[in-house]
Length: 121
Length: 111
Image 1 (cartoon, rainbow over the protein chains, first blue to last red):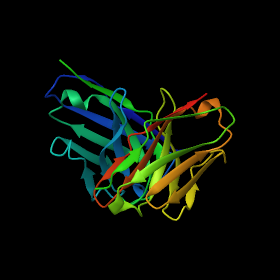
Image 2 (tube, rainbow over the protein chains, first blue to last red):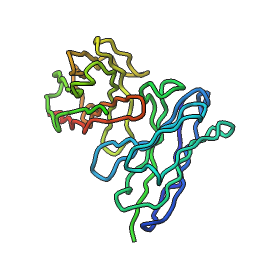
Image 3 (cartoon, rainbow over the protein chains, first blue to last red):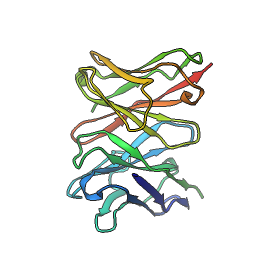
Image 4 (cartoon, rainbow over the protein chains, first blue to last red):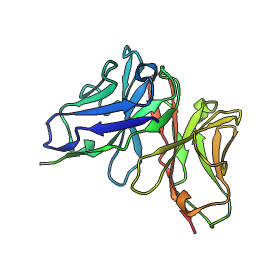
């Protein structure tokens, strides 16, 4: 059974940093691209960052480019999101998501349960 | 980059059928999309991947009340025999070479 468990969310001040983790199980982690998707309170889904199965290529939304970095440790079956220079508008539930294949070209086919990040003073 | 447009809300009666629409920007009318369901207070759930031809692949464990179809730039999700648990937000997703986008979502109310 595919499972993904996010952790690392919490309350942080504007300008601060946070690192999210997503521990994956139930599938061959290195064979699948992964992504982070967020959802601000009462709003829709917003794609944040993605990474292919090998880790060689990463992609990020313009809204987080230069501030957030996605990475993965295939030996630990874990996806990460390093978030720096956080802003109030980054407040959201952050979901870890698995793609249907190892490359960027494919749909998200599984979602984690999410972790809440609140940016406030 | 592609843009996905969805109606903000829809409603239908228990036991009836409803057809939700996701419209691709004209330059991207041939793109594949995916449909996702988000029940209140829960994480999203993948429903299906839908091609411009109308061919679709369902997620595992889903009832066959859900189906997909396409016409030009429009991608449809049809839910038949509506149940109370179908009341949810429905999002479409697509991607190109360096980005991924979601539609604004449709809130479905089951009357």
